[in-house]
Length: 314
Image (tube, rainbow, N blue to C red; front, side, top):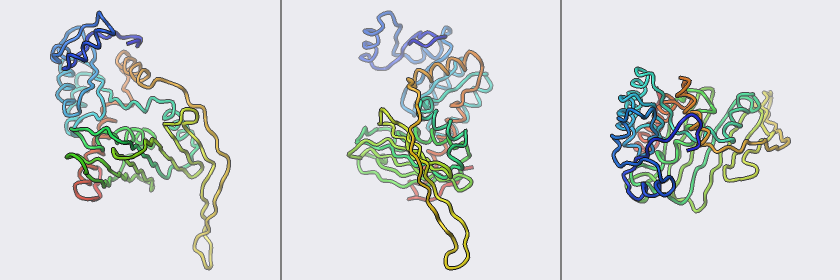
């Protein structure tokens, strides 16, 4: 609602209670419990698929086969093969796929990308993220597939290199899916990424550290006033002869908090989706970007099952 260039034609949900809430808020809205009615309708140009990940492939494929652009919740699909098939189908039909990596549209991530692109951080060294809280336990996916797509998509957007390998460790304490996990992703040029996801933390933490040769950055998404702090701190290493092979000196300068645009990320993302559909532009969070995240999730699953084996990425 409220997005220029489009109009919501119909809301589909299997829950009658959910549809009753829609009716109360938007009395004239067309609703249905039959997804086929939406996916095959001739008067609908695009669909938003906000459903469990195991349903994404079938729903998106049917939508694309019926000539509809697709906006799909993260993660894109359950397997990389499914993602590849949808990307190929969309390409043949000249249709857009956008994966809901909402954080890429926040003021904070936009500012981080801006700083990295401008060279303010110097050469990137590491990306370290914690996304932990107590619950909510999911019955159909692990904590990796539930929480890590956020950080993997942010990492992919900021680092913009092809990852080389993934290592994952963790554990399953309740139910049948992992509820705590630690992911390490190896990049070229010795860039290292680490992600901690956890459903069993006593506190909620949403913090990302980004280190470079010139600056270091902390993003605390729970801080309302100063989400990003940039530290003029670093390490200088020089060679030396004698007792020590290396001389290490530490730099500690100013700390500053750049202005972060206050935007409603989902509204910005949906506006961008409409813009891409109408202009034919390929979104930066397209199916290919979604595929990169799914490949890392698959590798993490395999590594976790093999108790931390290094899984190369093609």
